[in-house]
Amino acid sequence: MNPFEKTYHVTIELSNLCNYSYMHKKCPASQRADKKILPSAIVYNVLDVLGKYKYGAGKSIAFYLYSDSLNDPRLFNFLQYAAKKCPQANIIIGSNGWYFDEMMAEEIYKAGGTYILLTAYTDAERDRLNEIRNTVAAKLSRKFPKCSFSIRNRRTLDSRLGMSGRKGSCYAPLTEILIAPDGRLRLCCLDVHQKESFENVSGNKFEAVLLDNYERLCNLRDDLIAGEKTLPVCQNCSFANRMRGMYRSKQDTRPVQSLLRKFVK
Image 1 (tube, rainbow, N blue to C red):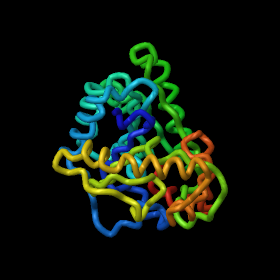
Image 2 (cartoon, one colour):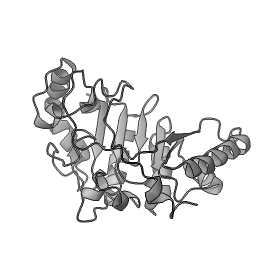
Image 3 (cartoon, rainbow, N blue to C red):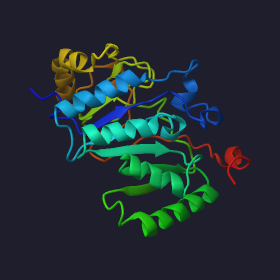
């Protein structure tokens, strides 16, 4: 049995740290009182298991969720290892762009990253990142033809807390597999308080934990596809048709330009 047959996205959250979170009290990263950094051994074990099952074409590996990929000094080692173990997978980094320039884009591509997703929170930052993207496209597209670069223009910080119920199918369980910074396998990226997490995968236990919980995850997925929300975290979720590109979340309407103006030139 291939436990990744239904999986198209594996998220490895390297930490619960984001350098913008203190400016936005509803950001899930700012809800954490203590720092959590995922041990390197877990990252390498997850990538080894993905490689074992030939995880690749049409699937992705992301090194971020609520955190910023570029905050972690180990990132480039992980990118290189992911590219070695899963050469056909789309390897994603996400960042708010604070520590990003043209050189960084080239280094990410060289290390094995294939998709850079940046979020711009001000007009000035959007213009700066767009200029970098245009330069990268002109200089690096031939050298790295399989790599891409996107910018989300978000004037308000996205909040996934305090969601209300909404009808719709969900494909999150198994479609997305998420390893939290504390080493636990999580049900879904929207479960910010980890109320439905599974065992810790430390000690090279990622494959065993996944296989032990595979039947339960399949049952949860089937229930959600049928529109049956049996878990409290699912009943209080506004994302409908999850994992089909139809993201429908509420956003915190508080603008952040004033918060970032003195930090972003």
